[in-house]
Image (cartoon, rainbow, N blue to C red):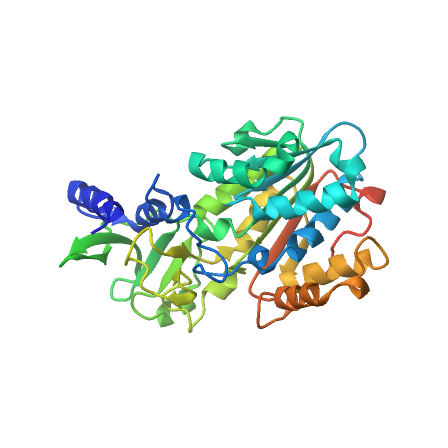
Length: 373
């Protein structure tokens, strides 16, 4: 039995039952033992799952082109490119490599900031990005970003790994409850938390729908992601806020083929529902509620510029860059394979959604924005 299992068991012994969100927090982020505190090949062919970054450097190149196009429209003073959830620094490296080669004049007054609360992951990133050390800075929290920040804040596959609450439907009582975790018969098992869960204001289920929901129908609430988006929006004085992630619209969470929600585990490129087994040894993820993110951004004064699939977002970049620094006609066979994987609907093209919001960008400064859906 691993140390992380013992740590979680001790919490349960002391309290009787813990909310699933706390289990997920420990499983993924417990110092030293959490899944994301380990560097041992979690991403890519030899890991547990693929990302757009692990496909190859083309994804970072495309983002770098778009970021440069945006940042060049910000007049005067230093501009910031802020990545939250940089993991091992691979995406940051791909972006900075392209900027150094193709936009050195922009890079000269650009500050790349990584928001990273984990000291272990910060050390991995520093080692990986040593070649760009003079252009980089690290902060542990969004609150440490410059108060006059102008630029781009972005994340890739960050918010789907925030700890979620699991809310279930009790058909006999017609009431919602919250799922927790206990230790029984040598394993972690699901249990209902006592009391009525506190639900967000937007969580209004039509009575006609509640009448037909099966017993224990479950949805996830990712309040942590919504709060993070609000804080990121407030920290952006001028510029763009972007995320690329697994996710759905609000109404899509109420689906007959998702009676247990979207929570899942990944291990050895196998997706499965045994999310309570082997804590710290497998990735846990739940779909982001993009409707909540959009509302949070608008409430903080942002304007939605694009919401749609990664496929369309990257196609828009390629269309705008035609005849520019990296026309597709000049791609080699490797780059063409990467491109197909990134945009094909059956690969990554529709697996990920993109949300882009902005503040203070009007007129010529937003020429070429991605407004299509």
